[in-house]
Image (cartoon, rainbow, N blue to C red; front, side):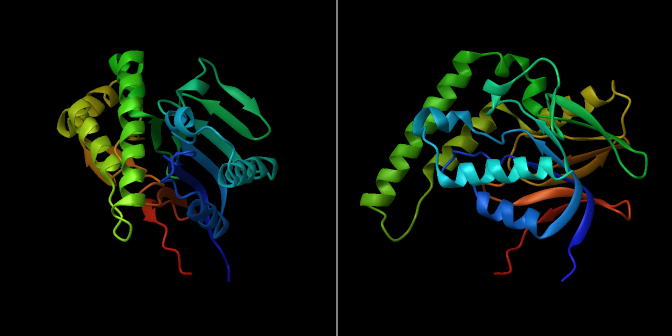
Length: 245
């Protein structure tokens, strides 16, 4: 069966070391298609969970090796890192093999449209530069996950519950008002010479146009297993991986 070919695949929020990441589906998805460019937009490694569960696991090693093998097989990889992988944050671009690590970049489509790509937290300096807020958020999420594991192991043995995800969403809803976030993004993009943006923080799908600015959210590989792709027919779209097995 011939693989679907894409010029570029955009993925985000893999969250390695997070117990809820779906690395196996990500690898199957990338194996099921062919592509020339892979842009990993933030949160590939989740240092928030490394602080709680630090040890090398098979899935982390396999995923890192897989991405590294892509870069040595003439696949151009751009890795845009920010909040959950903030320990890797660098002020300048780093290049090795066919991989580039940076904080933001511009992408030009086959239709010659230019998109600005970054993590939304990079525009929220009050949050990303606040170690107090970041450490507090990390501790709350870590404790809630430990509590969740205890409940599912000893009490809710058959029906799994996920209070940690609800707590995480509650914190985000407090820190980020969706409407105010959209207004801030549109105000920011007006000052850039671009046609749109692939930028977001919430783990939910979005694609809309406002004031001639095209906006994409790449979703995540915790809940949605999805990506933004550009094919050779000039289509830029959101897709969701459906495992046929």
